[in-house]
Amino acid sequence: MKSSYIKVTIEIGRQDLKIERVLEENICECPAGLECSIEKTLEVLDGKWTFLIIRDLFDGVKRFGELKKSLEGISPKTLSVRLKELEAKGVVLRTAYPTVEYTLTEKGNSLKPIIIAMKLWGAKWS
Image: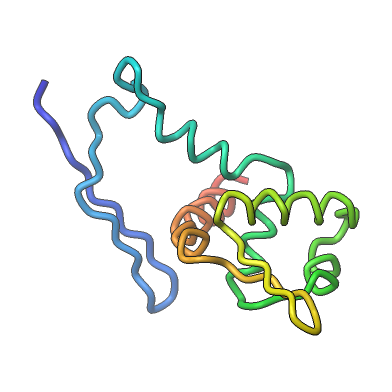
């Protein structure tokens, strides 16, 4: 089967995020014995509040209380559990000195195009 590629450009104000040469072939199939990369991504991003926590951390370092305030309706326990999960998965860095602060790791920041694409999709189709 011949591979085909697509070019995706997401425009946000002045910033263009370009993902070039995205392999279109076998997007819904994974070779036998290999884990599906989409499934692996969803394992990292699992949980009701996970995307919103990541979204809020794109603004920079936040304390627990700041996250709690910006995520209206989340319980402290749920926020704590989600932050621990994201830290264990290498998406969030927890720094404890006089106060505890959370920030995205390089791995977490690499999710920005996905979050932006979801925002644009939601704006278009909701």
